[in-house]
Image (tube, rainbow, N blue to C red; front, side):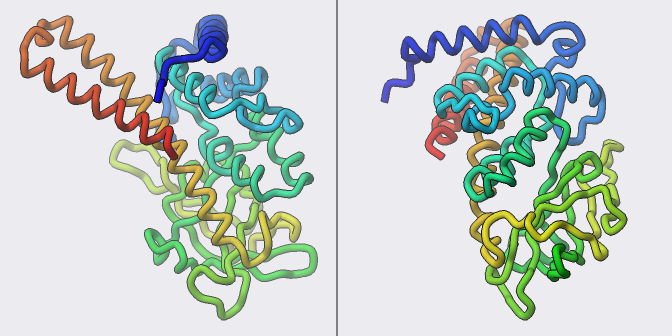
Amino acid sequence: MDFRDTSAEAAFRDEVRTWLSENLVGEFAALGGRGGPADERGWDTRIEWERTLGRDRWVGMSWPEEYGGRNLNFSQQVIFNEEYAKANAPARISFFGEGLFAPTLIAYGTHEQKSRFLPKIQSVDELWCQGYSEPDAGSDLSNVATRAVRDGDEWVINGQKVWTTLAHRAQWCFVVARTEAGSTGHKGLSYLLVPMDQPGVEIRPLRQMTGSSEFNEVYFSDARTSADLVLGEVGDGWAVAMATLGFERGTAFMSQQLAFQRELREIIEVAQGNGRSKEATTRQDLADSYIGVQIMKYNGMRM
């Protein structure tokens, strides 16, 4: 397969480079690729950078145009991400909203749900977190014990989630909960969209040795969400949750290899600067690392 840019892709790459050179300036450029969920430094600046991306529809670039996207194909998304990494742009904050929830919403949501949530993700007015893992449901997600019971026009939710990244910053959480009494395993689960700013939601940060709190415990005590904020069918939450994990695998794989590409370039610059690049063993190690990153890239493109 020929991975060289077509003429159209080369033109698009130039467009991305031009936009980044014109917009990744001043306090945005000073961030120097900083980011990650646990990095609280420069948070307000990173949020403003996300809004800059959103205004020009680089947030949600693959979405249909009717929902504010650019309807870009996969190759164009790869090109954007490659140039973004090369420019040493800030790490993205809206990973859970844009990268995981939005494609799931586009696949399973109603028109009303898409119209309600996608614009707020693109404008970065609403951040999302993922309510999957529980104390007894980590690698075995089907063991979810959090329950949701229908009460008129609302769902009432009780249970605990753990390792919830950015829960302390998010306005919304997509929650896998058991909605069918007596059900076990992957049956009887639903995928609920739950507002975080309410009395029934308690967030307890899990302080790491670095002093930051990337992860949180989230307790739902009679928390409520509207009855129409179920994504997909009631009881079909397992299929929706697995779709989200599929999007996560592809997104994470691509973002990780781009970070590795940037780090490898920095290592090569150091080796060239101190003369180690003249050593045969160092050159071989760098070549092996380059091959590994390229394999990771092409595996990501297959997902």
